[in-house]
Length: 493
Image 1 (cartoon, helix red, strand yellow):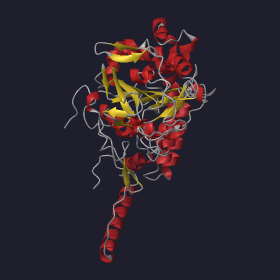
Image 2 (spheres, helix red, strand yellow):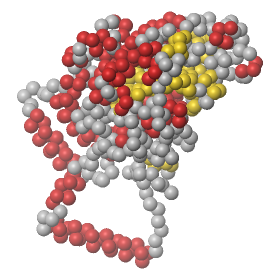
Image 3 (tube, helix red, strand yellow):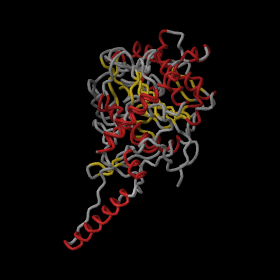
Image 4 (cartoon, rainbow, N blue to C red):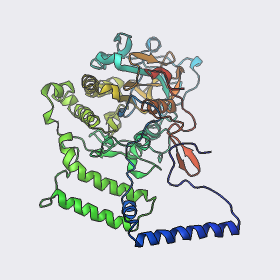
């Protein structure tokens, strides 16, 4: 029996009735229609009829299932797959076995371009125990080391695909196939928007090139299209056409929108999700002309803040600009902001097939200071306790070498971390085996990761459902358990 408070527009009740019962029901329906007609003739239904022509706001704020600490989310997606052995999961045994084949005790393994016959590749990175709890962070992240006590590092994530696009779909939507709603869309579906003047779900891509997985990574899937992500541009002009057309006033635009709404209402069905989404986009675009310019204009930020994010350095300027804009967005009530670091051809992402050293030094050099700046800025502004920050890629890298100095894709064990709203920072959770190949200590599937994120935002992943093709769909699919150790306070019974 469907017991969720989230009921889809295409839900149907099946019933059977005799011919006599059907005629009785039809007669009652005609009576109600006749009464409505009489009331309308007397002018008594004028307000109701007008109200029915106004689209119901599907983005209206909704109450969470339980008290949540995180009201906004910033997801930092390291596209391409950062290596766990070079970032947050030191493996001294791997260095001892450098140049040798994987011992038979680790079993068979097959990725895209390596097997257990491939030689093991040690890491040149040095690790330091940081913060009060001694979270181990590599020398690739000297700035992030200063934020160690904010991080809950999960070393035992695992997924189901060795291919970029399916792995990206899974990390974003819980499934390896495209067409399912993304994490941001599920959050909007469950919580609505806290801002009426800005997009509730914002996506910012890397200017180096398109994302391998593309728009399905921020799609609403089979949820109403109003919940899909809104893509902003990179650079100093994230939103185009914010200026009102020459010779047009705000009052004139408002009257035009009201006329369009009135015309739409003449033939609007009660479940016209696409029309609702189109209308919502018109309304949002109108409001953004008044509110978005000040949001995307970073010139008002102090020089100290701009330097904190690395805007004064060519290497960090772009990602730093996007991280600073993310802070400004959540500050103004945006529910979900997703930043992709890495785009275009493989080596312009974290996809280090050829040279792990060159690739990860460059990529971490672009991202380290902006990410640390974001965490520090959120903390000092009192926003970190209500903002969940996520760092993750679509998978990790193999301990076996590809060629002489590269690493292949590894979904069997990799790292991610959470910080901020509701997270117990300063800890490391789970672990991979001695060479970093598979998650063996407290293994957590991507479904668990998603269930935990929803929980931190006050949503029960079992109850957040949508009926599609006869199945109650969930972000966490048929599995997924909240990672209790991540939480700063116990989950409600």
